Image 1 (cartoon, helix red, strand yellow):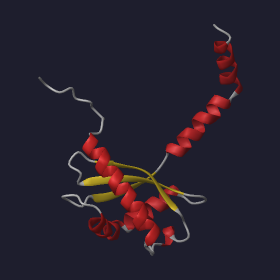
Image 2 (cartoon, one colour):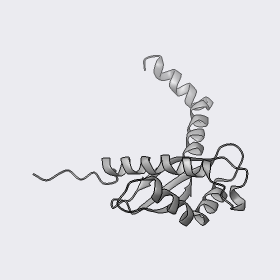
Image 3 (tube, one colour):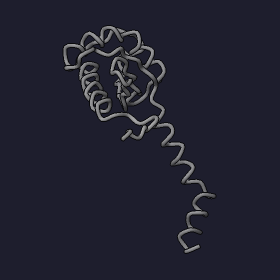
Image 4 (cartoon, helix red, strand yellow):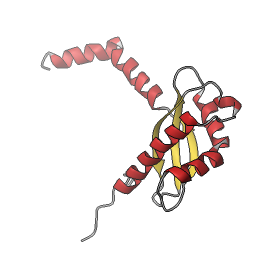
Length: 134
């Protein structure tokens, strides 16, 4: 019997490896003094890491904790990727140390936009209308 293919769904193995890498990267970035000008004085948070099916490439979605440009942070971490990959190889027990890619995390902006939409008078009126039983 054939397995159902969930296009776009990540396997349990990918999710586990990605979370392991996310946790290790957070520790490395907090401990190490990264000498990139875009990373000086900025607290970096990694919201999510996504792994390729073969676990050889991982994409980390990064943002600043406080003021800071997420695109500049992603660019700075991309310039430090080989250094971070070397440190990561010593911390995680994977067959291959993955190539690291960094992108700005847009999920917080999207959540804020949805909150603004839900708080708008038109949506509040529609929600109140639905609660009245219609």
